[in-house]
Length: 144
Ligand SMILES: [Zn+2]
Image 1 (tube, rainbow, N blue to C red):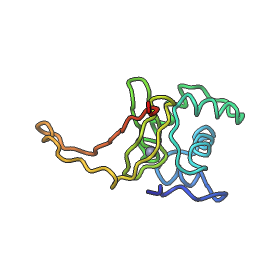
Image 2 (cartoon, helix red, strand yellow; image 1 turned 45 degrees about the vertical axis):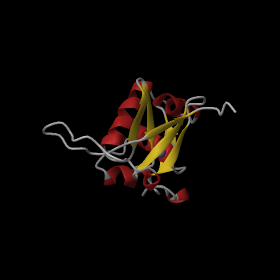
Image 3 (cartoon, rainbow, N blue to C red; image 1 turned 90 degrees about the vertical axis):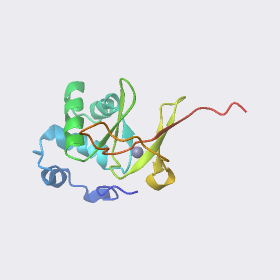
């Protein structure tokens, strides 16, 4: 369940990574790629990444953070997970896996792809094919 671009430690080269997916390595893209991908797998919202960028001294608007995250998704560097309407998380682990979503804290935790078996699926609508099944298992504090 490792992403191809993690565990690179100090060797992380955002310019090479961006070029490898045909994105021009602009200053803002490089800064966001470094914040996102340098530290292994994470799930982060655009708002949190924006705050991290500002704290790191990167001058960037929230709109640019959103646009850049979606460019990274389109390029295959990230996966977008929409947990609730209006709550999108960006996942640096692009391998096949599922998630626990903690309703109390809003945290997402990875579930290995082979730990979930989906018993049966409906046929895709006419002219469509199933591209992927994402399972989100919602958890909350145990009442017991
Ligand atoms: Zn994940």
